[in-house]
Image 1 (cartoon, rainbow, N blue to C red):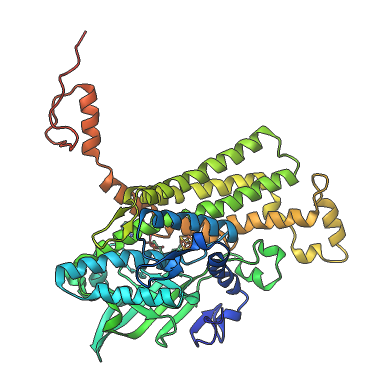
Image 2 (tube, rainbow, N blue to C red):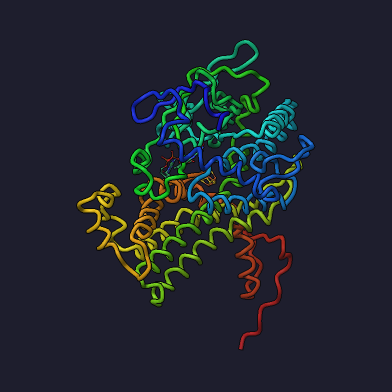
Length: 489
Ligand SMILES: Cc1cc2nc3c(=O)[nH]c(=O)nc-3n(C[C@H](O)[C@H](O)[C@H](O)COP(=O)(O)OP(=O)(O)OC[C@H]3O[C@@H](n4cnc5c(N)ncnc54)[C@H](O)[C@@H]3O)c2cc1C
Ligand code: SF4
């Protein structure tokens, strides 16, 4: 916490420039969520710390480059646990996935061009590990007209680009949007967000930028019901923890060459994006941890309402659990199927990672729908905490909030507010909208799934069993000569 204070960041919140963002009540819950990643390293060091080859010592798992399948799997376990503990986005995975992807891409650029990015990148990661720092992954640009690439935009600043070279470094201009937890980070790793062409060479840039660079401006994203954090704890629903997204403006930020990891090698932009999304799309098992909280809240409110033994209620909880475990199952499988890269680190299975993220674009919405079903209409119509605490109307409201015997009305409204928080309040940003768009909107996963589906091989399986003749346009590595057709009766 002390490392976040006193950095003099230029931060805008609700139309005002704030002196010390770390003390702002709307921002504090996001700092608490990030702090849980540090706490977990103390309470469960097996889960949240790991031995690093780069430093030769134990480091935080969020700063680690995966050296084995077990490392990749442990990330998934840690992410689910932190989702359970916070009920929101704990903000540290984008940076973790960026350093793991960048580790391989810098190695591949060096192999092709004889550059020295990989060693620089390793030095940067070792620094992050040694000081136990937080890294934000800055990939998404404003993008302007989505039908046009960076160099074809009317305004060239729609994507972050190199605008100058001086004093042994480069100068970056542009903006990155939707940036998770950047204020709570120490470094940003800037990356291109899509495949680039030779015309886009100035946009093919990756570099580490200190969060307190004076040429950066941060504007906090508005979250649904965020100002309830100014009103006390009950109406927030989850007062302790929240996510954070910011827009970051790069106003000619100078970066020394020693922190640049891609500089014009446009043909490797897609490599970095694809590797990053292979990690990040299965990082969304975090939503299974958050889902554990919401399914728990749904079960709790059903019990409070006295309907927990009804068969349709049990079935809705079973359905929610089935959906939630489907998310975890595919993300966990992607991690289990990790393979070594040319650089020697380990990377999740791309197809399964995309299947995981694609489930995440849908299933949390259904889990949220079922939670709202079980909560009843009060989840949207309940009077405020101020009314419940008012001397005149409070006692009457509490009388009419009674439900199953032994349930305290205050506990009932807290659970209702939690369901509201996660399905339409502040943490619905993390549980729903982020599930839809974070790490790429649904169509992006379908493109990858289509690419990796191996339809030719699947067709060959079908033709072989059906007894068809060899199919020339469906070569299969597992089928060299067609079997004889089955006897016809
Ligand atoms: C809560 C949250 C946290 C996030 N955190 C981070 C972060 O930490 N770091 C980071 O870099 N990014 C982050 N993102 C950004 C995320 O990766 C993007 O939101 C995502 O890639 C979609 O981009 P977009 O929001 O610009 O949507 P758009 O690109 O505007 O997409 C909107 C719709 O248009 C479609 N579309 C877009 N382009 C095309 C096209 N060319 N042709 C056809 N259809 C198209 C999409 O499929 C989608 O349906 C975060 C997003 C959210 C919501
Ligand atoms: S949405 Fe999930 S994967 Fe992404 S940073 Fe937040 S907690 Fe991590």
